[in-house]
Image (tube, rainbow, N blue to C red):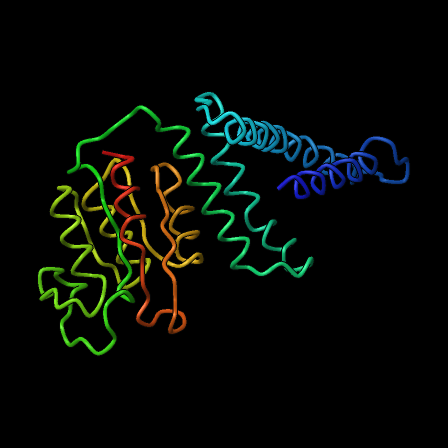
Length: 239
């Protein structure tokens, strides 16, 4: 993100030179000047958001004044960060895993000391946790699970009932967004791979989301597993 900010600054300086100091720019200097001022305004917000994020991570204290700026900064710079990662040959999963961890630390800093009723918390699970040979459709109704122990779904359903939270199993991002829209939770605990967690966190940037990464001994989207204690810890943090 810092590299992205520096790149934007370099671009601003170049176009500012074209706009204000290059005598050969002619009439082009006026739209360039307007663009420079606009991008500079955005860059100020992004810079403050970046500073607020770093301070919050280092001190583990919420900075309410910077919350919206941090959200804007993350949304704007994340694609640039991925682009940088590709150029530097950093695996996308590694960047996304880092993004999820930074998000989790920011959520914990912002929400420490604040709890919500269990019925205001939504736990979202991916359908790939279900055994691939199971004939029961649990994305339509999680109650169809017979809790045979062949996959983690039964234990997660029992955990949800014990904690009194909403627990839903989604087959994709569209269904997950519909669940969030219908239940209108105050916070979310999401279980998924790094890619899906990242896109979900960005989609719900106004909601606090704690991401729990599943692990994939049989490859992506197939008989994935989850550490039950990590999900329980995330639930207890909110409630």
